[in-house]
Image 1 (cartoon, rainbow, N blue to C red):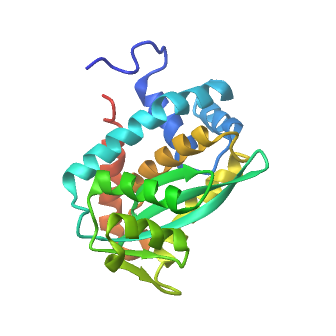
Image 2 (cartoon, one colour; image 1 turned 45 degrees about the vertical axis):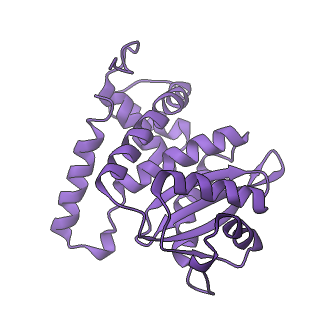
Amino acid sequence: MKSPFRYFNSSPEVIRLTVRMYIRYPLSLRQVEDLLFERGIDICHETVRFWWNRFGPIFAAEIRKRRIQHRFFSSWRWHLDEVFVRINGETHYLWRAVDHEGEVLEVFATKRRDRKAALKFLKRAMKRYGRPSSIVTDRLRSYGAAMKVIGNTAAQQCGRWLNNRAENSHQPFRRREGAMARFRDVKTLQKFASAHASIHNHFNHDRHLTRRDTFKQNRSAALAEWRQLAA
């Protein structure tokens, strides 16, 4: 396989660092440019934009492929939720599927949140991860209508606090959205949200649930694996 870095003068290490800083942390393009300049890396903020557009989806796809190969999702409980996103004054919706450990499985941007959109989102997630044993949702009727078409109505669960896992998973993306000063079109929203979810999964190790030494080992392993992406 040909290297995706073959036409670039900058080293793959610099490109990976730039993409990780911009997608993972709530930083603007110019803030990433300033932080890299402090490290002796002189690039323009438009280069940061070009690199994340070019390499962000590549890195995210490789992370997603590796995690699917090593983990089994079909018997897990899923949490589904949607959050509104304003694009050029119009309201769009970002659907999110999260497993019982808080790992984001799928994100999907649509202009509506009706039965058709919910059905397309569910089919997209189940095609990649299989059919879960239970699905927790809020009381939006679009979920029930979509699951009725799929034939998975018995697996749906609704409750006041049952879906906190999915609602909390929106917070990192909301902080990132604020730094980006919103999105300009649905395609950019879908592209960035998918890359952000995969990279967030890769570096999220639940610090509050593990011992310090275990957390340091997991963090070092994740960073070492990141440096090998698209190698």
